[in-house]
Structures are given as C-alpha cells and as structure tokens.
Length: 128
Image 1: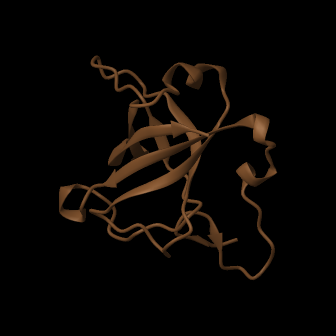
Image 2: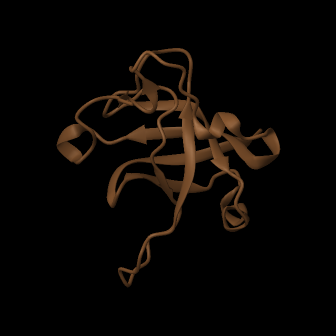
C-alpha cells in the first residue's frame, strides 16, 4: 500500500485509518492552533493532507533521554494541504492513553515531530 500526505491511500483500495476504527471514547479530541516550520527552518519540504499522523511530544527531556510520543491525527476540511510555514486552526484526535491526560488543558503547547525532528508546534484552544 502506498501512502501520501498523511495517510491518504493511492493504491485504489479502501484503506481505513487506525483512528477511524476507534470509538469516540478512545479519543481525546481538541481544537488546536498549529504552526508548521518553513522548509529552511527545518520543516517539511511539502505540505500534508488531513489525516496526517505525526508524533506529538509534550515534553523534551533536558538530559537527552528518549522522548515520549503520543499518537494522534490532524484533521481539517477547508483546504487540501497545510504547507510549510503555515499556521492553521485544526482538530487533533489523540489516542486516549492514561499518560496523555495530564497534558489535555487549554493553552497546553506541544511539538509536532517526525522521528526526532521537530516540524512544528501546537497549542490546545479547546477540548471537544
């Protein structure tokens, strides 16, 4: 299966996101403002589509220990892609894990990563 953007399948068959299989009780849904770094600032070279599932990091240890990352997808429906350098209000659906609950509050900021590379930042505006 070949994927582009953030989970849109181009293989021609029906593909379902793992988050789509979850019930609402399995998700924490927030409205957030995200800002993606420009390419020359270390951001992506190309934009991403709704359904993109980066790593979400709420704390970066000062001692260089391993990052704790959380699963969640970024949803929007008013444009095709979010481009590098863009700031946008979106919906983020996090998997409801016990350790993520401490971060789910209005004003909480986090890092949007691919592997250990920070591509952008998010801030929770409201809990849905």
